[in-house]
Image (cartoon, rainbow, N blue to C red; front, side, top):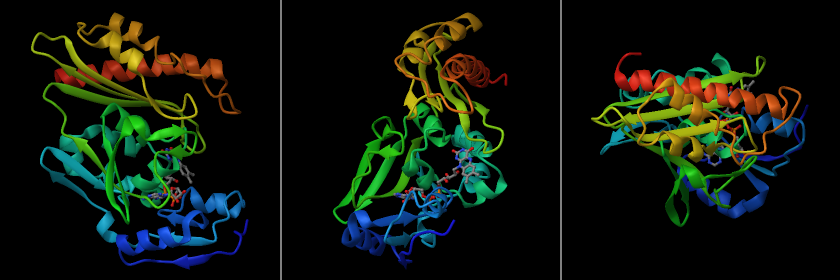
Length: 291
Ligand SMILES: Cc1cc2nc3c(=O)[nH]c(=O)nc-3n(C[C@H](O)[C@H](O)[C@H](O)COP(=O)(O)OP(=O)(O)OC[C@H]3O[C@@H](n4cnc5c(N)ncnc54)[C@H](O)[C@@H]3O)c2cc1C
């Protein structure tokens, strides 16, 4: 349980961190909260020669309004998201999601950027950000680029981040009027990671029909994904238990569910449908203002 030897740097600015990352390339790893990287290093599944610890860059920890967006710095902890009044008012889905991650210690140390960059197939924020159509901003010495979250998760533990890039912040748009959101997860009792997790966003039109829907799913397959087949069934329909049940049947469409010691593929397929229905019902009640 002792990591292989490594050199350690604690840069004072993001620019300095980016220069170090560029210089050391593949041999370097960014350290944020350390909750995923350090266990991998202790098990020697990761053996970086250089650790670039960005944990002290307080300028990367913030939640603020920018034109009808909310920007959240990569080093913002899950606990800070859970207790943000701004997010509670403008984007409660992230507050709800943060509150069910791990335990208090995990939420106090784990960062939003680390959660996304690590791309654990059972992590919670990916589902919420997919449902919200968020954008991820990556910085490098060449400048910044914006990645739609739908293009960010490539595979298990693999993202669209390129060598030399650091995830700097995430942007979410304010919710439209008559929008409700909800996150429902079946958690693994020890770690609280998702066996399946479903984030739903429903916007109702003036005629009471579902004008827009966003559904993000985690835990089911090797990466979190947007459940477009579910969304398609919902759009333009009048909300009802029946339509939610019908749409939820498509939650696993096109996905080969994971099977492991926590849950078989069949169980995950069954549960994702149940949790999708629950998330849709709750999002609808909130959109109506009745939840
Ligand atoms: C016991 C336990 C239970 C947990 N339960 C849950 C759960 O229920 N739900 C859940 O979603 N998560 C859970 N987690 C994960 C945790 O919430 C963290 O989000 C996660 O460990 C990664 O965040 P971190 O800041 O610790 O990243 P680190 O461990 O520091 O880094 C993880 C990876 O991301 C890279 N990285 C970090 N920040 C950046 C950045 N800004 N730009 C580019 N690359 C970066 C690192 O190089 C590394 O490869 C759990 C973790 C533990 C230990």
